[in-house]
Image 1 (cartoon, rainbow, N blue to C red):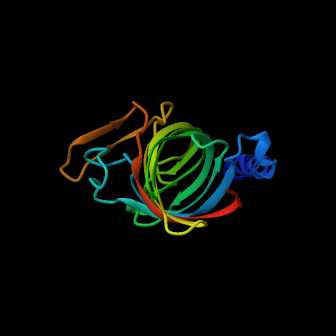
Image 2 (cartoon, rainbow, N blue to C red; image 1 turned 180 degrees about the vertical axis):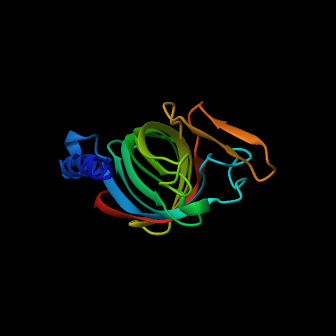
Image 3 (tube, rainbow, N blue to C red; image 1 turned 90 degrees about the horizontal axis):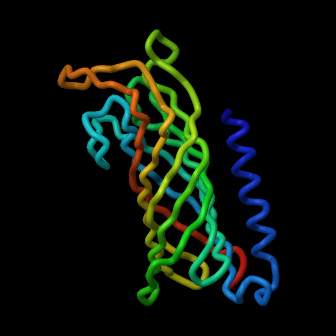
Length: 205
């Protein structure tokens, strides 16, 4: 599934790059293509006392890559790949490969605020896989979120992002929390967290 998800992400990027090279008159005069990297910290919502950001004893941390294709001054598309492979309890990891639409909600000088709705694949390896009661799988994910982007120059921006993911089809064996309470995993997963990074404008204005 990891290979297929990677191919899916490439298919998101290639058409976006092609569209960003269309003359300005064909896309409303404001098309641009930004891409960059982030560092993410997510509550994995597996074997945690709650799904609040930064409220898991084993917060997952890792890098992410993204592109933002702004077709008009308000509307665009986003694609991302995130690999949360650090700090997981018992070797737990999560990754996601997502794409979808974004909308600029406001602009204040150099600061832009965007909201987004993404969908794609979420991958998880639970603690101590492959022992009994653990699993490794991929699931459909929906991810609303928001992004703040501050332009340092015409080509470089700082970026802060929050994302709340829904993995509705996820089911797993029960586990025990650090307090000894039984934790069921039959209502899906809702990983969520923050990312900080830098983006660079490759094409457009």
